[in-house]
Every structure is written in structure tokens, then in C-alpha cells.
Length: 280
Image 1 (cartoon, rainbow, N blue to C red):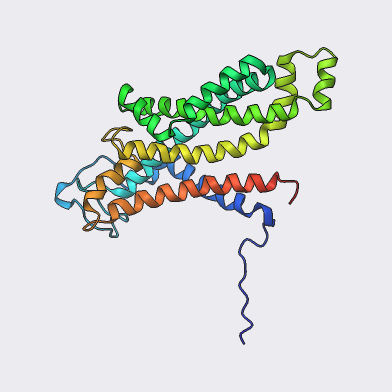
Image 2 (image 1 turned 135 degrees about the horizontal axis):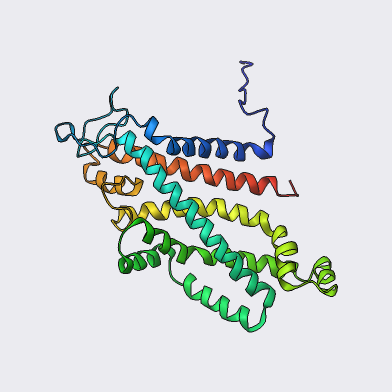
């Protein structure tokens, strides 16, 4: 029998850090590609050449051209800017709203908690993407409205997470001690409760960015997101679906970009969860 043994190229990385390392490498690469898209992109993403529309990948256009002859590689690079921008802004705004609402609900309790949670239940009764589509149909399709629609549907999960964590912490001895010493509610929440719930919040945020990217792509695919000629991964998928059999490269590369980006953020979330799990 052969004595060949597979060598793990990441053997130097701690076992519970590998997912975080791989995910971080993916996301840093995508962030750098989006940041330096004007330098990396070989062509202007809006330049058209109708005579070379639907051309397959070659040495000049590594990802091929779309139906209007635009370079797909350049459009994928510029599209990453929109997806990452939407994901980061939506999670930042939603988490801030969720922290404020969840802290108020969990710490005050009583009628305040009941009213807030029933309102959250109403929002959760509707599928998030369907609620976002309804909001976009009212506000109209553009980048700002995409962010508003996704924030309206996304803050609820953060609020419920923060509320649950605060409910589990507010009766702990160190919180009761601060309260007995005359600490204000503001100080207890800001100085003692929130620092102890950052770990699950960070994990939720990384998954939230991936979810926001998928939601933005879905809205753009339906024509409710970023409008042409601005490149978006979702709109690129929509443009390529009618040429799926004769020019599959129109959908393959934007689809791979979405898959890799979402996978990277999920790896980071799983990695952070493993690193913070004291049982491992």
C-alpha cells in the first residue's frame, strides 16, 4: 500500500480557527477587489460593443461579454461594491436599532416588553423577502430604498437576540450589585450588559451581512434593486437567464461571486462562534 499522506496546507492554523481564517481570507480578498475595482477592472463596466455581444471568455475578456458587449469581469468587480456596501450598511443600521429596542425591551420588561415583542411578532409573521418586495413596490427601485427596505425587515432579529441575552443577564449577581449601589439603567446597560453580549451579536452580524447580500441580489434580480446601467450581481443574473443555454457565462460568474462572498461571511460567523465557544 502507498504511504502517501495528504498534507494539510492549513496545519499551522489552530483547528478551531480554520473556518475563521478561510472566511477572512475570502472576504479580505473581495474587499480589496471591490476597493481597487477601478484599477483592477480591465474595462469600463458600462462600455458597450454590440458586435461582440455574448462572446464567450477569452484571453482579452476572461469572463466573456454580456448581451450588450460589456466586460463581465469588470461588471462583477464593480458589482461587489454594491453588494458589500448594502450588506455592511444594512447590518450596521439594523444592529444599532436592534440594540436600542432589544435593550429597552429586555431591561424594562412589563408592558414595554410586551408591546415591542408583539410588534416584532407582526413583522416576523411575514417572510422577510416578501415584505421587502412590498416596501420596494411602494418606495420605488433604487439603492437607497433597497437599504431602507432591508433595514425595516432585518432589525427584528437583532432586537430579539439582544432582549434574550439581557433577560438572561439582568438577574445575575454583578448586575444586581451595580443596581444596589445606585447605578443608573443607562450605565448598567451600556457598561455591564452590552459588553457581555457582544459575542452573539458579532456572530449574528456576520450571518446578517451574508443574508443582506442575498436579499439585495434577489431584489435586483426582480428588477426592484439597483437600476441599470449600474452593475449588480442580481441584475446580471436576471440579464443572463434568457441566454442560459447559449451563453451560460452570463450567469455563472455573477452566481459564483455571490456564492463565494456568502460562503466567506458564513465561514467567518462559524469561525467566531467556534472561537468563542468555551466548551471546545
